[in-house]
Image 1 (tube, helix red, strand yellow):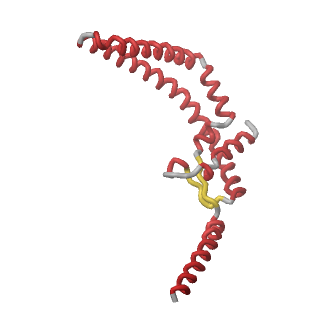
Image 2 (spheres, rainbow, N blue to C red):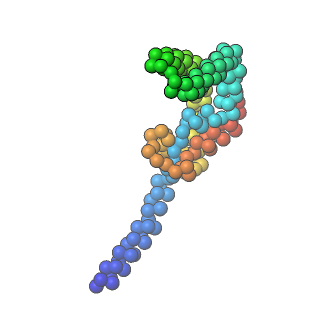
Image 3 (cartoon, one colour):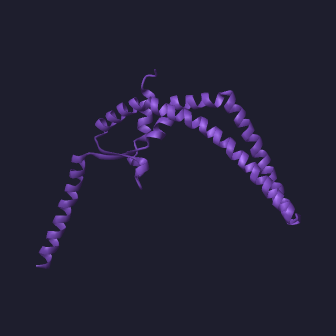
Length: 176
């Protein structure tokens, strides 16, 4: 009797193992995509970003950032070297100077990021119809039954991502 139950369980598990992939295949593949990354990795996005980085305002902000970063790093190094022999007032003044320099650095960093993000947002809006077209094509050709935005997924192995495929297809589309 125990042998029959064991045999029945074994046959049931094998049958279940064979039907689960069939059910999954009938419903289609599951995939994830990071649309923002897909768009920002395109040749057009890289070109647009290079254009933004080549503008005079951006170049001036970048030069200011580099100068402030160098000054900040030198202040940190000097403070670390001299902190042991500094009085309380000197340490407080040095910390205040570091905080001011860091604040200036953060302000310039924000300006640089804002310029890049503005170009990125404009590109996202511009390419939105093309992205929808590419996604429809990939869903059909890849047999995708469920497509999720990568940011809303807790975990997905890299094999589930179609982000690179979206980028490749966007690069293949004719430019306007």
